[in-house]
Amino acid sequence: MADEIKIELVTPNEMLLNDYGDMIVIPGSEGYFGVLPRHAATIANLQRGKIDIYHNGSITSRFFIDGGVADVLPERVIILAERAVNLDTVSIQKLDAEANNATNAEASFANAVKAAI
Image (cartoon, rainbow, N blue to C red; front, side):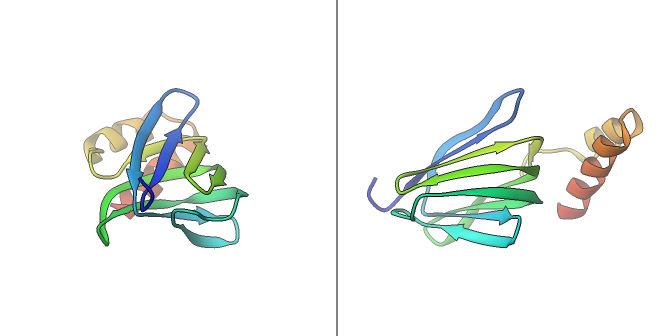
């Protein structure tokens, strides 16, 4: 696994992802940044945005988060997100239903996810 990095995406409710990738692009508070295997150890604040996970030079998984923290180590990235959804499996109908029955912050997140799809 020397050419891959372990990626974990965790919310308060569940672990959404526990996988490996060649690279991950994360929405940092200062802008998007990429993480490759053997990346320098870093802790970064995250903003609302899309996470792209690459295998063999192509995006294979996409997630949308509502801020959080990334703990980057040379062999692993752990993302602790306030909210997150898998953009490859989320349904627009489910997002609409959640937005109609949600607080302003939750509705704002649902609308941002729909825009990212």
